[in-house]
Amino acid sequence: MEFEQIFKQISPEEIEDNVFTLVGKDFPVITAGKRENYNSMTASGGGMGMLFMKPVTWCIFPSNRYTLEIIKKERTYTLSYFPNVYKKQVLFLGSKSGRDSEKMKEVELTSVQTPLGNISFKEAKLIIECKLTQATLALPDDFYEQEAKDYINEAYKEAKVYRQYVFGEIASVWVNTNRS
Ligand SMILES: Cc1cc2nc3c(=O)[nH]c(=O)nc-3n(C[C@H](O)[C@H](O)[C@H](O)COP(=O)(O)O)c2cc1C
Image 1 (spheres, helix red, strand yellow):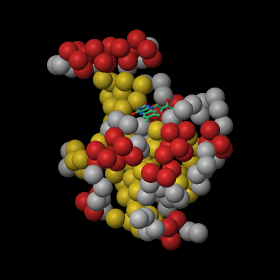
Image 2: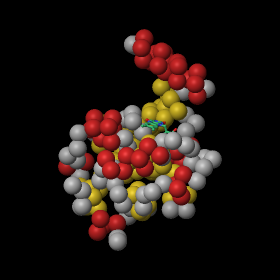
Image 3: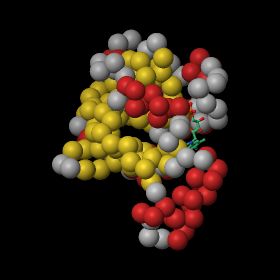
Image 4: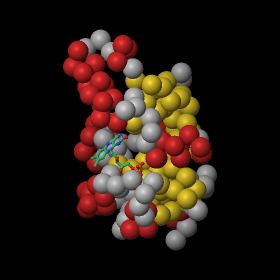
């Protein structure tokens, strides 16, 4: 089936889902790369809103995350949100790195290419395509709450790199026409 037979384009204002549920419970799957070489990972931090008068999403990654490497190379990526029945597949994409595994071949999801050439999955209920606009280090001195400072320092100790906030301008939004 053609992409546009499965998904209908909507504007960012027409997204009906609650953003806290989408990010904190559904967990976005972030996918970067083209048909020949793409990679996906699970996220549970991030959001969406307006920035510099543009609709944007934001995510957070350790600076050396493999998916982030591909986002920076391609400058585009998708955020895909799935119905609960696909939770196993969503969590699988967060269980190991595509840098040293074949997780994209193993995952039980069907990849699809958007008209812009980005990759998502037929099973997604909502797809947000983004253009990378900014990747900014989250440095401990920029935090005003001790708890947040401690968190970012602990995260640094564990990964030996700082986290980065990644902002992307929303290029298009698609909803699955079969979503329940
Ligand atoms: C529920 C869940 C939420 C996660 N949230 C994030 C996140 O917000 N940012 C992040 O960088 N990694 C997050 N991860 C970890 C990555 O998904 C995981 O390390 C993944 O294997 C990275 O894939 P990659 O190395 O192929 O890029 C999360 C994992 C799970 C299971």
